[in-house]
Length: 376
Image (cartoon, rainbow, N blue to C red; front, side):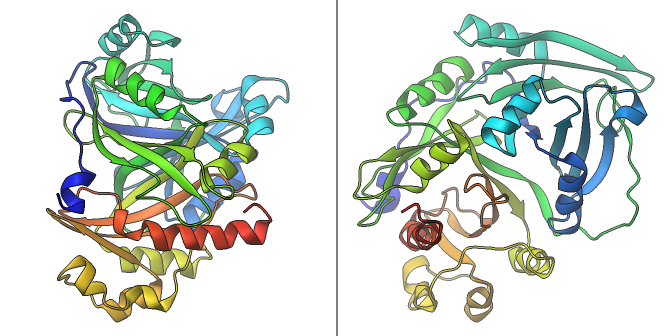
């Protein structure tokens, strides 16, 4: 059996039991939403389109809705030092708290999820304003992360009731991001199978791809990973756990500094990765790097691609392929002082994988960063 054939292992047929349509918005709880919004706009190319704050009547926290293409990220920070949001940022640093999922019916998704064993966070709720209504509900998932079911077909406003239109002081160009491709979660030792089972049983998702320490590892560190996805393939979520090796893996490092399970990275899809990466780099975004030897005999490994290899090498962009095509990808360095959350930029040309052929080079690059931090 070829590597491509063995990589894809369907464990169960996905069923549309909750009516999940796509990613909606990912909400980060951060120490200073105003400053974070500046970085997301000027460095990453997201436009602030809506906000909720003291000036809009929100006495609890400030939130900025950042959008680029169909990708939405909400940045929220608390006014109080003694509420759940402040406790979360004190424990985890800046981190993704809420993975929003757009659904057909927020009440149905909630009721079905609870009946299948999920733990409730927010019962079905409807909010309204002059632009219509939004219904939402939420449940717990790994660590302190929650999934929020959002039904917005009846709403024509900027984001949802309670948010006002935001006009930035200056306009900045977007970087070519079109949507969220996938969201990766890190869980602690021996928790991957339990988490994957949760997505099977509660969401009806299927396991799409599995990786073991034989696929993802070096002589020093390793991990296990299983990708779950929705019936329509729009929502894909790899789940990682550490694997035994000689030294600390990137997953262990994340767990140690995030103090628990959480979202490791978000992959942002683009139609022109060179332009996106180039524009982000010009604004100071730092990316991991691989040695020039990575590009030796690249076409022998991945087959024909339309991009210029010298240009890809100039920007350090990685390439991988499967039976359906190829992909281009690159990973930022952590987006805060803690070695926790980062972004991936990805451009797909048919390939449904996640860069298995790049894992060796990727791990070696991450290990160099870990060694500089004294964490390898």
